[in-house]
Length: 76
Image 1 (cartoon, rainbow, N blue to C red):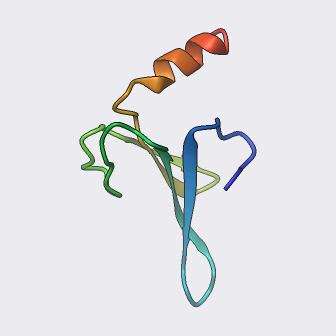
Image 2 (cartoon, rainbow, N blue to C red):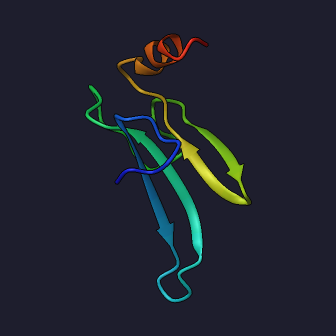
């Protein structure tokens, strides 16, 4: 799934209520990481929980440290 604003190599999953289709939360995880992630704030990668447009969004850190290189490549 390709979403605007998501860097290649990361997956964005949306979870909605099955009856109302209301968006309940979003989870962003690195694809093909060296270890598996769990859908929880207790994941070993120490993910961060944000509220984006009033939707809880869980953003995982990678175990292969790819975000360090991605930030450098973008000039941050």
